[in-house]
Length: 269
Image (cartoon, rainbow, N blue to C red; front, side):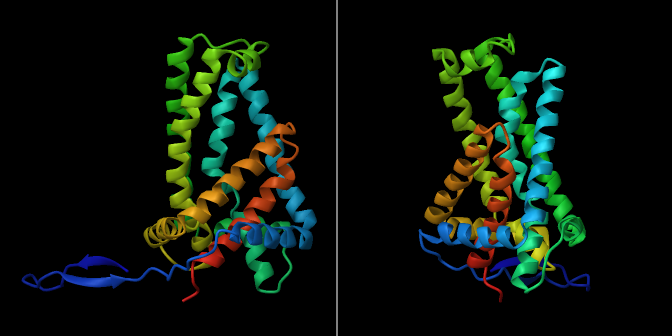
């Protein structure tokens, strides 16, 4: 339970403390992420056209981003941008949450339903989406500073990028430092957004309540949620390793499973 201090209408009235209820948080077992994935796969199977269309659209955006950065000589930004995608992934998946929500209600879902999801509780969802975008920009700025420390503002050429970053001592240390810093930022964003965005779609609530609920849910189930975060990274990395094509399957599956994680942890009271 959190509290809001509200001032009385009378000039001499003392402050009144009103309860500002957050939902009950359930404790879940360490094996629950596999159940979320199974439920996510069931959603995927019920709406394969919607799922693949959504996933392929994100793959197309990824290719355009890579080609755009390469065309202006900023190929070295691809790595932090790809890593930073996980920061904004929860807001990108709002349409997928809506598909799972409709399935839970026993209804079919169409691509139009996924796109219209952003109009539900639009102000609050837009606010957290803006916050996640700012975190992405912050991460890219930090990544550039780390890059400058290791490469002295002399980025490797496109042809030598992979060899320099992945097969030299300097490049490997750069990856370790970048991964640690990025992991800290990603953990904070995960705690804030993992349950809050599905909650904002599902309920007529405010951003503050949703964020507090998400942080509580992650902290009270930190071992399970750490395992879930590791699975998200694994599935996303597998999708990236297939030249982005695998993301067409991985991203909808993760999105659907994330919805079921929210429903499992945040009680309906």
